[in-house]
Length: 100
Image 1 (cartoon, rainbow, N blue to C red):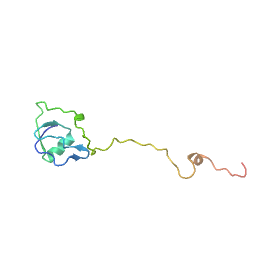
Image 2 (image 1 turned 180 degrees about the horizontal axis):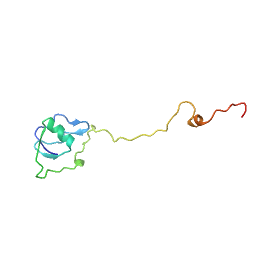
Image 3 (image 1 turned 30 degrees about the horizontal axis):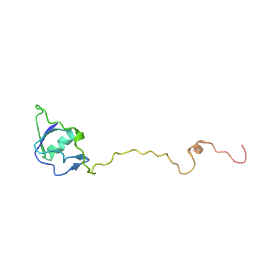
């Protein structure tokens, strides 16, 4: 979806998507979700996609020391723990201790 920014968004970030990088009167090619939010809030207007838009790689949107971005999530794995008898003991049949 191609949009032109007509008003600077008053918020810097929505759900982890930085909006403070969008410049007034510039055209951007954005996804449907961001485009819908920008159009609904009247921060942007749709633009016909006949002419090429200015392409800015996402790597250029660096945080410049801004810690508003969450750290890269790391999945931690832990060994399962069982309170009580071990899993092997649950599979065994009970035997009396006095004999076979």
